[in-house]
Amino acid sequence: MVDRVIAKKKWSTKRLLTIGGITALILLIAGSFYFTSGKSRLSVDMERLTVSTVTKGPFQETIPRNGVVQPITSIYLDATEGGRVEEKYVEDGAVMKKDEPILRLSNNDLMENMMTQQNQVYNTLTQMQINHNNAMQNTVNKQTAVADVEASYNEAARLYNVDKKLYAEKVIGLQEFKTAENNYNYLLNKRQLTLQILQQDSVSRAQQELQDKRSYQASQEALHIMQQKVEGLIVRAPVEGQLTSLDAEVGQNKNKGERLGQIDVLSGFKIRVDVDDHYIARIFTGLKGHFDFNDTTYQLVIKKVYSQIVNGVFNVDMTFVGKIPKGLRRGQTLQVFLELSEERQSVLVPRGGFFQQTGGNWIFKVSDDGKKAYRVDITLGNQNTDFYEVVQGLKPGDKVITSSYETYGNMQELILK
Image (cartoon, one colour):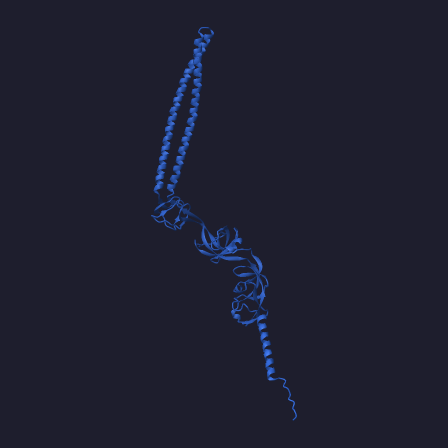
């Protein structure tokens, strides 16, 4: 029996299955590499996108903040003395003239203290008059004593001079002369002492009168202060303006220093603006701002910055530069734009939802033929309500997608349909 050679098949079923498996594995690996390492693409309907053009133009960094219209000046009304509200002359919201009464308080202790002080003034005045009369009488007595001594001295001097001549002529003896001499010397010393006492009395009297006047003046000043306290029980408008925030009802007790209300000066307005605390290093007096009202833009400037921060917010007061809009009302809310920089020429891209997904680090740029958009890295600077300032990555004339990237933010390329 002769063996027959059987030809070996080149493409056996096993070999085909092996080649097919290897090919499938290679395609799987290639596809995985393409979709993970290469550009991932997504077809997007153009109607779902916002395509904006990068421009170059004037740019100013601004931040929008809410501001509340307030009177240019508000003066608080505090109770200078405590008491019971006896009468209200006006109601909240009334327009007041200066010194016009608002309400009246009563305070019995204060009234009793004033009466006591009045009696003190009367007693001081009475005592001053008594001291004056006593001093006058004492002075008269001393002046009378001086007159008596002066008369006795003059007589003693006359006798002394006569006896001196007679003794020299040997008409009288030594004993008689010595008597006249001793009497003269005695009255001379007494006269000098009496005059000295009268002079000291004048000084003492002047000092007593000065002390009495000071005591009387002090008691009068104390009474004046007490009268002012009593007068302060009638609360009056310190300036012309509108009474607001009045917190007082008849029969209510108010403590000393307690807030009763305030007077708003109606000669002008200011804007109280709330600002986030992370801007605090860039906010200062003199910084400008603006707001729109009735289709007109009005300019503002910061006049006061409040350092206190509450819940991450601090306040600034802004006043008007130039014209003031008509129709503003106290408490009205406005959107104020704080100007954090001067106006300059910059490359600009319109604001849009893309920033939330990219953080301003990249953007989809539309190709020249408009058929696709691809990711490009960018650097954005400052911003305002309309634009981002482009520092790097885009040039004027570029078209970019500025709508939200929420559904395709991980794509590398968009195919525009």
